[in-house]
Picture 1 (cartoon, one colour):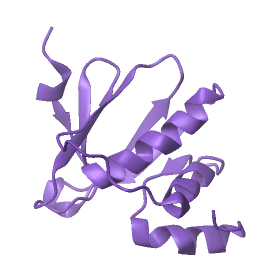
Picture 2 (tube, one colour; picture 1 turned 45 degrees about the horizontal axis):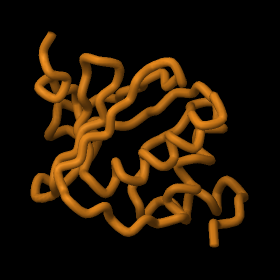
Picture 3 (cartoon, helix red, strand yellow; picture 1 turned 60 degrees about the horizontal axis):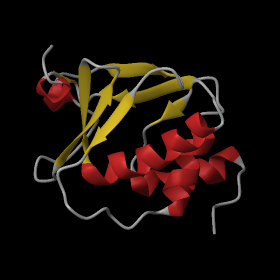
Length: 131
């Protein structure tokens, strides 16, 4: 069996200067994210999985990485690995985590969004921002 981090899927939007982190889904497929985004996704995904919820995780693939969309069915029975290369976790933004978590309640599932889109998402959803 090949090591899962050697097989890459299309990643979400990230700047090439940022360190690459991997979301490894199941035992075969790795998806690239910047480390800050994946750190926030990890917390949002864990919050949903902790209460045994299954849902879609969606993101757009930027043109420079091939274009398109990716949707994964996230379930408590499918192993997830979060592989980071940085030695220190980033300071977490509670508003961003709240927006990611709340987006999972919609019919489209959890949608990966940029950090600067989180407040607008919560405002549009009519949800109070996290303290």
